[in-house]
Image 1: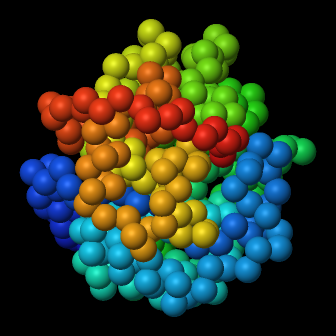
Image 2 (image 1 turned 180 degrees about the vertical axis):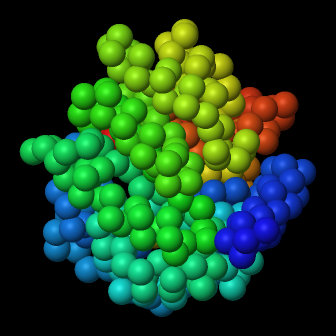
Image 3 (image 1 turned 180 degrees about the horizontal axis):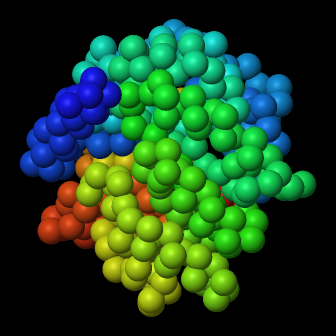
Length: 330
């Protein structure tokens, strides 16, 4: 077994252990998204999660937030943006998440990756990285293109022992380009996925025939991701336009913005809008029991994936109010 394969196996074993323990304890968050900066080096036409001027959230502030996530016994922390690699202390943040016994993940557009950064993130204990690729060739809407990112993806293939997942975006260009992106990711040994088309509020939008054909083709290419990252919920959305499930957003999975406020997810800001520093077990239990008005047509993968742990547990608290809807990153 190679060193890379052994490292991935060891890290995956620890994650599976923590997920198994969390499955027995409904008071334990599984995934928390943590915004480290709103600033981005790109300006994609569909994105509301960035600006060009915001300073990074200070290191000590983020350490305090990570410490509170550890007190809540969170399993995984996703460091995201904006563009996470623009934070000057991202490696230190990854190391701090790992040092507090949690599993660190990073979302990035990939443009700022270098060999040294990849090696540093690896040594800090990074478990996984996700990169969304919108098209094969850049266009006026997005420069997150396979041609421009391929050198960065090859660096990852050569030097990363952490998992890499490439998300092929179906509504960013011609559908056949998403298939080309998925094929390239698999050829490099990465996990791949294809997100459903969604509206500004994160709800499923029925696919045109060409996009549906491309989605089905990507699914047939095979899957490398672990079973707990399965996106089989998408099959029901494609077939029925809705899915019957119990969303545990705000409890098992939640989003912490740059101001340190907790939101159900990146699609539903302002609900609950509670400071993370005061978020406690009572808040987790309240969100766990809350039936969300947006659940039937939700396309939020983490929410679906993590909520599987509690599909047999009750969820009987009616919605207190409709979530605040903001545009969502495609």
